[in-house]
Length: 260
Image (cartoon, rainbow, N blue to C red; front, top):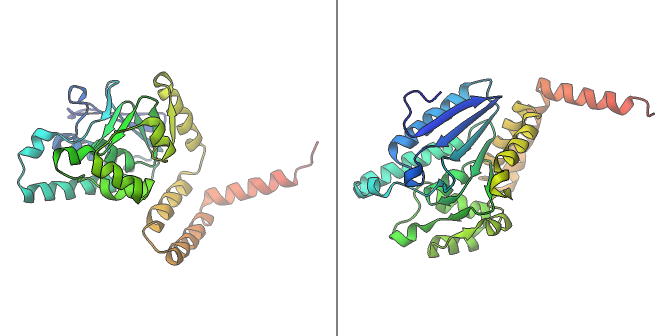
């Protein structure tokens, strides 16, 4: 599945699509070619009915992704930089709106654009040695892939402002405390931890998982009144599915079965 791809390794196995950022010598830095291949892989996973979950990780053991390719950024005019930022934001928004659950498997540095990529995923599972940050201020620039917005929504304005304005890195334990990641595990347990988590998701209704994602992602942008109205609509959509009918009937049968 990696034909024609130079910066991405893309694999599909047992209902899971895995996207590996494959620029280990540059700590998997994001450039235009890699992002184009990433979008192509995401679109393939989205349209493949056999794929029920997506994993994104980085090649090597040093970095998930250490940010954008600085050499490429230096070549851009202010207008080109703004257009590139909007293009990257579009890719990460596409990722965020994927109907299928997306897990970031974080195996090292997760900085700048790398953290922006991870934050667009639904879940983040990291090693205990992973390092997180938005260090763009140290280069006198700001995040351009959604970092100022998603980081604030995930961990709150106070800590987000501190990370954005100081450029300080935080350790995995701090990221977990801030709910920036779902789990932290020893490096040699990362693969197993992600596999176990995915297996749990694969037991759930794919249609209902997509409805949950939609309800949460849209609702968070609304005021509470309209978000609750949208949840009610999604509740009706979920109840109308064949999976819900089967699940509810199975529950009733179990409840009525005689206790031994």
